Image (cartoon, rainbow, N blue to C red; front, side, top):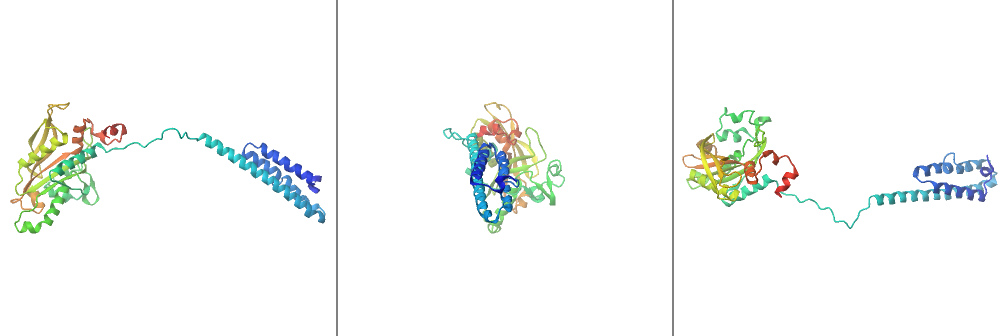
Length: 354
């Protein structure tokens, strides 16, 4: 063992502290600093060797020498910690410079959102019919066979019940193929509320409701989607005629497109829930669609069996119903040629409707 280990003097210890401080100061990275620490404070470090050498010192020297060595150790540890802090501060300063923000630049504001064009069309439809005294009904998108088909006089062998047209789910339920089930649900509840008036032969408040919402069919192309939107309308009372249907729908279509420069025609058709039935076509008098008949709705006088399924007497109550594709109305209003654009989620397309 060397003399500094067996008989360390204050001068030798001061020199050792200064040497350690210089090595620590020369360390440019935390790893280099830890290597320097090991040379002085590690298991085989110079301070550790000095402490081990106390075992060979005379008893009267151990206390004095031990105090000197511990003081030197504390000074070396203080120099080590100071250099650690200096390296950490330098690293933080470098990070802050790299991530510095120019607070004089204008802030990045959030983009302004907007309603989906189909939502805009739906709200417009609800507002127009609301001004005519129609309620708005909403209901389940998973329906029972009764409300979706049977109550609407759709026979068991009707093609609409085919797996090719309808999404079936467990328990005999379906994803509703139209929003007409809500007409039945609304009418049944309406009749229940006014049953005493009906049984007493007194006038029942008319049923006047629209049912907008999502519907589902197995179909997909430029003008059809497996998920689409419909609005079904129903007006039932004691003296509601086909003339009322024509008047209401023409007023609606004129208000929706904000023009009277259009023609509307009713073509005879067939639907199991109306009799007689009609397809509704329209033709603009100007614009890119001028001169083209476009189908916009199915309609008709409510079938007597459907009136019975509502809990009413078809000899006393009569009414009309219609069903329009909200997506198609939106396509015509905004000049969109492909239905799928509404559901692709492309912000470049959707931002046009803000």
